[in-house]
Image (cartoon, rainbow, N blue to C red; front, side, top):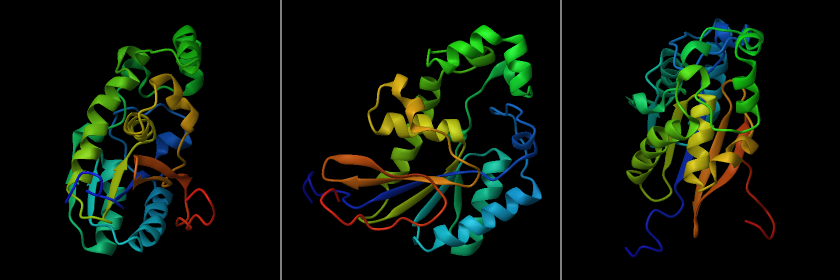
Length: 217
């Protein structure tokens, strides 16, 4: 099979975990291992039924329990196993972790403002977003390479880690990653492989993708 046709039609679904208690409290999670709420489990169950209809070939997940429990709902529906990888964990945010947004702004206002301006900031003394991408994107691509043609990979991870991975895979400069916006709990983004590589097909979706009918398919 020549290089221009290898792997055509593969799809990557990047799925954020369900709701947690700290989400409800606007508390910064980072790599802290927080469980799902009852609503978060219900969100994962609903989303899993939809994603199962895409007939995924493989599931890989962050080993943090909120992502692992979300992935488990899809595994139950599809019968697939789950591979866990710490490379898909959320960005480590040091002393910010466990604080509410208001507490972070009060204690680390300049650092918070610089981060919101898109400057490279080690939030709370933790990781840079580019460092998160350095570990997360290769995990996604490594598993995607194992897919058959037209195969689908589901990656269960965290909002920030997903955004940085998408940005890196699409070849965007890091200062543009914020333009992708956030993912709601248990929503997903889909990368599809076309003639010129990976492209973003869906973002922050909670429904199944519709075919693109028109001149830009």
